[in-house]
Length: 172
Image (cartoon, rainbow, N blue to C red; front, side):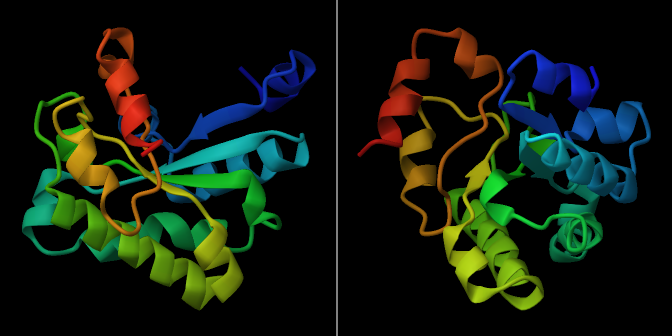
């Protein structure tokens, strides 16, 4: 659906840059940045998804990949208060694998430093950075304890009764 239709329907949030859109539809980081700009211009808030594949993680290039996904958005976003960044390691989406709390924290800290270096210190402190990638009631407690993990983008677990436990973990 287009941003125009969503805005007309009163929808407040969109998810852009999800790994499935990037891999199945070939959406580049530049296209995601353009869509982000347009959605914001239409009054929508954006959950901007970024994340690396398993081979990129294993090669030690996670931060380079994240930078490549964030850089095009630098000039597209004028109001970062309307953007939430979702770090979703592609290798952990729907696989049952999850980043360790330390891996999630390292990537979230990198995103926060990117915001500080490329936008501003205030935006770095204020922007919510959430984790997505096989979040469950069993692992959410340890993940949310990390300094830079501000919440979750939950997939399949949102369809289970234990989803309430994930929600509660963010309220503690």
